[in-house]
Amino acid sequence: MSEKRKYKKRYCKYCEAKVEFIDYKDIESLKFSLSERYKIMPRRLTGNCKKHQDMVAKAIKRARAAAFVPYIVSRKEVINNPFELLK
Ligand SMILES: [Zn+2]
Image (cartoon, rainbow, N blue to C red; front, side):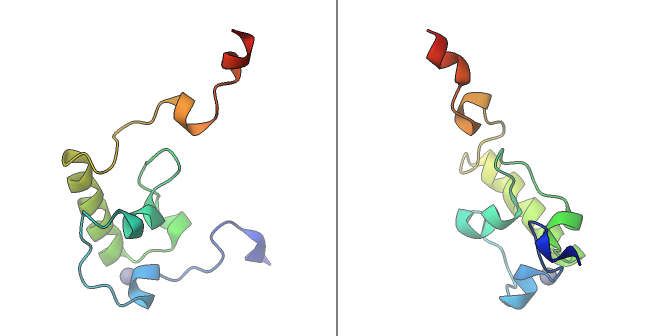
């Protein structure tokens, strides 16, 4: 019934991939748990287990501190600024 949701199955991707350690430099795997505005996705959306969500959150915070992941993304970068057309 809920097959059409953005995150179809509620399994932990990191468990499936048997990830034991999430490297903060490995942004590709962190992206699973980042929204398009680089916010940490809540567990109810990603289906991550508690263990991996904690690891991801820690890794993302580290990645932010090391500037691999931005803290904030300006609106411009998310959607092409519609006001630009008015200039
Ligand atoms: Zn897991």
